[in-house]
Every structure is written in structure tokens, then in C-alpha cells.
Amino acid sequence: MKCDKRYRRGQSFICLVNAVRKPNPLMTESPLTEENRQLAEPGTLYLVGTPIGNVQDFSPRAQQILGSASVIACEDTRTSGAMLRRLLIQTPLTSFHQHNEHRKAGELVKRLQSGESVALISDAGMPAISDPGFLLARAAHQAGVKVVPVPGPVAGVTALAASGLPSDRFVFEGFLPQKKGRKTRIAALAEEERTVVLYESPHRIEKLLRELLEVCEPGRLCAVGRELTKLFEEILRGSLTEVHATLSSREKQKGEFVFILAGKNYSEESVSVPETDA
Image (cartoon, rainbow, N blue to C red; front, side, top):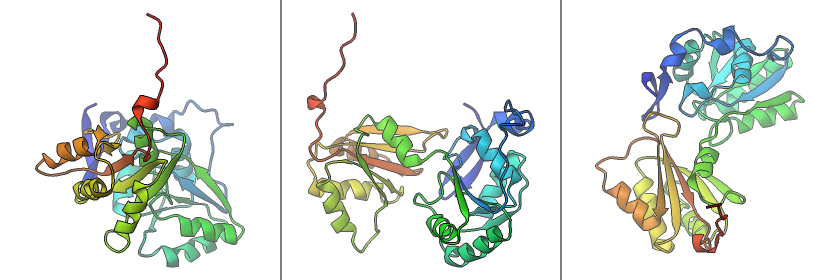
């Protein structure tokens, strides 16, 4: 898919494809009937999932809520503003990020109690999943405010589904500590029987693999999802040794990473493969 324009998120870019150059059909010519069209209700907090890369993953419902809410709370008004303008959404924005969420949570709850509707989004993915949102959702519940999730893509689950590693039981770790407590957490993950899903920056992904090789069997299976749904999407799968060798051979790591580690005792030899007709 040809990339038309990109907007920055951290050290990566999110593709805005050619299809959104035209007026957005989901907003102006929706196949939904007026009876099924959902508008934001007064006094309601919406946690709205946004695309993790490809803007075409935006659901019609999410766009309708964002277009009809009183205000959209977002991590970065510049990043979200660029994306929303391309979708013809002109709802006012207010910042809500890790440095002001304690203060802003109270302010937004007051606005909700006064009858406004608030839609919370993160730069990409689902709010409160390794992004701000937990404090506001908790404060809303405590104040008796209605909280409504509007599901969207989640990088961890997306990578897990594509990894070919067991997904019936898994543990989500988010970002590991950079310094204090990191070794302890990694040692615990080495003993984990369930599949482990975590996020890592391009600057530390090789370090993570080295640390795991110190406490895990070198043949333990893993997978790395990079730039999911974006122009340069990549999924690497193999042993810890193999994936480390592939990544360390590159001059520079780029993009955002989801790392999947198979459970301690998982073996593909023990998994039966369904027979197919000849």
C-alpha cells in the first residue's frame, strides 16, 4: 500500500494512506443507518482505541464518537490533531499525558459531571494499556460517571496473534523497568510458563535479548513485531539466539517493538498439527 503522508509518533512514523485524501466515507457517507449511528452521550467518558499504524483501521464507531464528543483528551495535541484533521474531525482537543494526568483527571471528571462528553485517546492503540487512562477511568467510576470502551487495535495482542506462539494463556508486561528492578523482572519472566508479551524501545531491544539469553535456554522461541500495520511492518520469529543474531546484524534498530516470549516449557514438537486431506 502506497504511503501518502506520515505523521510522527515518537521515533517512528504512522502512514496515512491515499484513501484518506478524499472525504472520509465513514463520516460523510456511512453505510450505517441513522438509527445505528452512535453519538457521544452527555456525561459519559469514552475510552477510544485508535490505529497503531494504518489509519484505515479506525472503526466507524470510534470516528462517530470522536466527532460528536464535547472534547477529546489526547497525549499529544499535535500528533492527534494531524490524524483527526485528515478524518475531518474538528472536536476540541485537550492534553492528557503521563506528566499531567493526576491533575487533569480531576478536571475532566468535573466536566463530565457538568454534562460534557469526553473521549480519551492515546497516540496509538487503546488508552490505559501502557498509556495514560487508568487514573481517569478510575476517577470516573469513583465519581459515578459512566465509562464506555470503544475498542480498537492493541499492539501487544496484534503481535501475539501473528506470532504463532500460544495465545490461550499469556501475561502482558508492558514496558520493563529501565534500571531498578529490571533484572528481577527478567529473571521472573524466564520462569514464566505462559507466553509473555512486552513492549521495548528500539534502543533497548538488543539489550533485552542479551539479558534473556543470560537466564533462558538459547533455543527458547520468541517473536518480535516491528512497525505493526505500517509500511515497513516486520515479524521475526525463531529462537532467542536466532532473533538476536538477526537484529544485532543491523546497523540501527528502527520502529516500535513488541516482544513475545514463549513459555518456559513450550515446545513445538509437543504440539500436534492437524492433518490435511491429500
